[in-house]
Structures are given as C-alpha cells and as structure tokens.
Image (cartoon, rainbow, N blue to C red; front, side, top):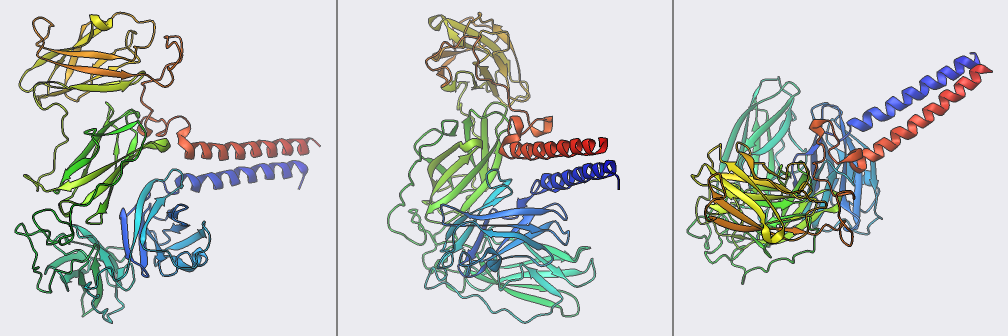
Length: 607
C-alpha cells in the first residue's frame, strides 16, 4: 500500500472510531426510567431494580453512595429487546466481595462493567435506604431508593407461604423465591410463558395473612412470550403475605409466595380483623387520637428543618407542612429557577408509617411548581421530610406531618390559589433581575386594574387584566429587569386571560431598587375611585448588585428562560449542563485527534 493509501486508511479509521464512540454514548440512558421509585427487599434477599429502556438499549445503575459506605455501579443491557432490563442485587452478599459476585442481570439480559466503588465490607450491607441513580451519577436521568428492610422486624410477622413446584412453562418475574408489592392499587405483576402468543392466563392473588382479599386478572401472552397483570393491593395489610398463582392451559401453573411491603401490625388476626381497629376502617388499626402503628405513645416529633437554598420555597412558607391523609394531596411552591426547569419532589416518612413518594415536575412560566401525592394509606400523625431538588445543588427541605382528612378524601386536591377572596395577593416577593408572580382573584368581575408602586417610592406602573376564561383568577408577572426599560414590565401569564398597560412607567437609568412597592387594586379599567384591595411587592437585593451601582450599562441578571429541549436549546442551559459539557469535550478531543491524523496522512502522502 502506498503512503497516500496508508494515510487515507488512517483517516477513515479515525472517522469510524469517532462515530462508533459517539453513537452509543449519546443514546445510552437517555429515555431510561426506573420501573418503581422505591424497591423494597428484606435483608438477605435479592432486590430487583427494573429499568425501562428502548428495545436493545443499555442503562447504567448506581446503588448507594459514599455517605452510606456502599456504592456499586453496573450497566444492564436489554439483550432480548423487550424494553426492560433488571439489575439483581443479592443483599446477603452486597459489599463483601467484587460487584460481579452479588450483581447480576435478569434472564435474557446482560450485565456489564460491574464495579464496587467503595471499599470492601466485612459484613453485607445493613438494613436502610440506599440511593438509586440511573445514568451519569452527577446528572442522573432518574432516581429512586432501595429500601433494605430488617428481617423479622416484628415477632408476629407472618411467614411467607410455601413455594409450590409448578410447571416450567410459566415464570413470574423476577424469578426469585417471592414477589413483593406496595400496598397500593394498580400493581403490575410480570412474567414469561412458554405458550402460544394470545393464550389467556389467569393471575390470582389470595391473602394468607392480614386483611382478606382476592384479586384476579386475565391477561394474554404477547408476541414475545411475556405477560403483565394489574392487581389492586390497596386493601392489603402492610407486611402481610399472599399467594400468587398464574394458571394457563393444560394445567400449566406457577405459584409463588408474596409479601406486601410495609411494617406488619401484630394486632391483625388471620380473619382480617383487629382488636384495635378504628371505626373508620383504617387498615392499620390506628386509634382516633392519631397514634401511629397501633398506638405508639405520644405524637412523633417533626424532623429538623435544613438550611437550604433560597432559590426554592415550599408554600405556605412556614416552619412545617401539613397534608391530609387523602388522595391527590398537593405540594406547591415558588422558585427563582427558570421556567421549564425540572424539579424532583420527594417525600420520605420519618416517624410512623415508613413510606417514600417521588415525582418530577417542571417550573411553570411564572416561577411556580406543584406535585400531587396519594397519602390515603398513611396514618394521621406520621411525620415526613419533603425535599424539592433542582439543578446545581439547589434544594429545599421542610418537615411535615400527615393529618386526618376532614372532607373530600377520595377527590384529588386542586392546586391552591394564594388569594382566598376577591383581591390581590398580600405579599409578592422576588429578587432584582428576576420576575415576581402577582396572583389576583376576580371572582365574578370581568376586569380590574393593578397598580405597582406609587409616588412615595418614585416608581409607578399599572395593568388592566381580564378574566377571559371565567375561572375568576388571573396571574400577573412583574419583570424587575425590565422595569423602566423599553421591554414589557407587566404582563398576564395565566392561560386564557389578557391584559393591557393602564399606567405607563417612567424611564429608569438603573435596575429597580431593592425595596417594598405597594400593590393597589381598582375595580374596572381605570384607577378612579378608592382601591378595593392592597398588597405589597418586596424586591430583594441581588447578590450581583450588592455594593455596586446597578446601572443599565452594567451586566444585569437575565430574566430570559433557559431554552428547553423542545425549542432546540439545551435543557440545562448553555452547553447542556455537566453531561453536555463532558460530551462536548469528548467530541472536541476526538475531533482534534482526527485532524491530527488527517494532517499526518497528508504529510505522508506528500512524501
């Protein structure tokens, strides 16, 4: 081969290596998600961490953390192309040897790159909660919790029923000695069957201890030989046991023991009744005075309130939060993070019933967020810690307590509006350079006029708003960065409503001062007559402006939202966040190497 040919071959090889290296890395973990946010397992048993992925894709799972003195990581590959891959972790050996000795993949899938990051332990991991992270550890695409529960946590805990020797034609997944479910409705039971696609299977769950129940579902085997049944376990006693039976044609049958996650209440007898059961039929036999877990003495104390970032505020901004024990209880708050930013809201039980709820939500166009949790299975009196996490370490943690539900316990809550009667919000807050959210309740009025400021503060502007959608609510945004500039300062941001400027503001040569500005609300489309309500807008000093002259010529904090992925921008700001910057660095390095190889090839060719 000539030198020119050698150089061309090197260049083509470099291009091929670049494409091969960049392609899979960009696709891995992108659309992956945990099947369950909380995976509960008894100490000594094998935990099943199932991940939903694109067919044939792979996902990297991290279990634990340095703080917990146990951290293991591995990649599971969906080798059979069914869109699911499971990481199996033997808690009876975890931490005591190489990661490959206690980590494995589900049947039909592959395990790669198993590694124990922390040092080897003398004993297997202790009971407790361990973090689950999916994708890059510093920028995961999903998070969860592995809850390792102490075996025999109650002397009266019922034993698991026996595991029958059944047909090999049907397998309940994960293929372990038992199944575990949460005491909630719509729990999915999955499995595989060596029968023809379209064959009907009967899936039955019968209580063996605790409250009596029978759940039945009929499913069909899909084209890949799998099946998925949906059963309701919301009537089951936490910690109780059941027998799961899957029946097919020709006497094919699979029977496996199962346990409902949670703490077993020893008050339950085998008939499903309890001596201390309250009149409202609470599944745990909690007394009417709010004692937790069968009559614990006194009321559990609230967890401590952490000193968190000022970027996120859970409302109401008090020292603790109370939520009713019903379905669809709403947590809401405000944040200075850009609209579209993803937040993770997690609620963990501290004293009383052990539970964990987690979901993600996006910051709205006017800087608010909300998340809904079903707490109908949580006994009143249970305390919890609520955390709201955003990017770059922003986090707010508040203590809370579950209280008795007084009315409409079966109906989800609506997101609360911060103005109870006709008028404007009492206090709206923001920071220089950011946007304040000013809610107004109109009730049956069609239009009102809001004035911000006045002669006493040497600044004044106003807007007339209209409740076009008839819901009696309008939300106005006040952009402090645009105050006194050509850009619009006041605008309506609630969907279905409208507004127009009613009071023109004067020009300002600098950012709006940090101060309190009166909010004055007038009936109708003018400021004639007496106001019908008042409030105040508090503008805090920006850290960037502290000790400086915040003139218009100096750099000011921007109020422009970070471009979203849908609009073609990076969801984490410029460069796509840490993951995006790392990927860009890898591509740049590879491109530099490619240029060097091409240059060398040209030099060789010229010789």
